[in-house]
Image (cartoon, rainbow, N blue to C red):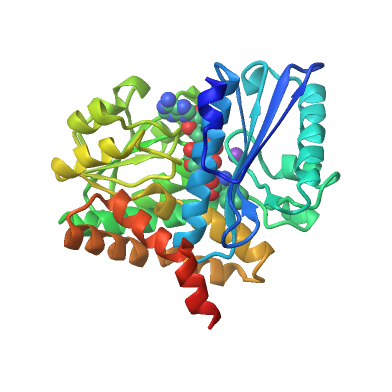
Length: 355
Ligand code: NAI
Ligand code: PHE
Ligand code: K
């Protein structure tokens, strides 16, 4: 319920309803500890405002960890636009009004929160937001922005897949069975990179057109509802979060997990179950940080494309650190990554850096 969801440890929740379109807007700032909060705008049709608040809160928290573990000088936040219907049933005039209202809300936060693209928003939506507010990453390149973050995200996920396979004793991806769920902006690129590395691709999507393209490229189609029962060496969730709960963790026939989706595990217990079965799982806020390197690197830190690629490739090394820590301490990889992120978020680490 809304009452439950507002009992949250983050810094700020902002909400607004637009009666004309039936849309509810939520912005949640989890932390500004390391810099202005940042995280994308997600548009979706939620069962209730409580669900929208919960999603925004979890996603904002993941952004804080992503920025911290990636050594980016930003905090974590996220926007959720709770649509009155699924995104594909919102007409363009309504969508345009929705974006204008969202931009107005962001602007009122005066730079404490910077948005960017996420599920169901893209660079041209960022262009429109930027007409009302400047606190926007990922505008199109023609409009002075860094453009889509998907390529960088996919590159980082590919590095995470390689590092995870290696650590799990699978060697390189060559000849390995890799199952990619979601063939969108990120997943499509992940498939291409993994295929180049010699992996045998199994792919799933709910969009028949995307499946047809993958089938033409010679990949094996798995029905969307059989993903969690399909045997593979490495599973790459690149669709939505919340895909692995404890029950799925107990049965999923894979040896490793590394993907792009935010909040792949429903909770810490699911991570414990994976660990007990020896399924090595790349924490998502480490594996999918390529997009943040791209957006924050290009638009805040003055990096060029090579810098973004170099830092994104470093995701493999960060994961090695996470895996070593997890082995030393006998904790889940998620808990180990949390430890690394929290070291950076703790007041002591900033004091040390300042002196
Ligand atoms: P997208 O919207 O381009 O692609 C998602 C794909 O998943 C679509 O092809 C969709 O049809 C498919 N899909 C949806 N439900 C499915 C289901 N139940 N089974 C199989 N396929 C399903 O999104 P994008 O940008 O590729 O992002 C994918 C994930 O990665 C999201 O969870 C996003 O939050 C996360 N992510 C994306 C980043 C980026 O830079 N784009 C950065 C970090 C995380
Ligand atoms: N939404 C993407 C993510 O979850 C990209 C993004 C990164 C958007 C940083 C804004 C800021 O990482
Ligand atoms: K998108």
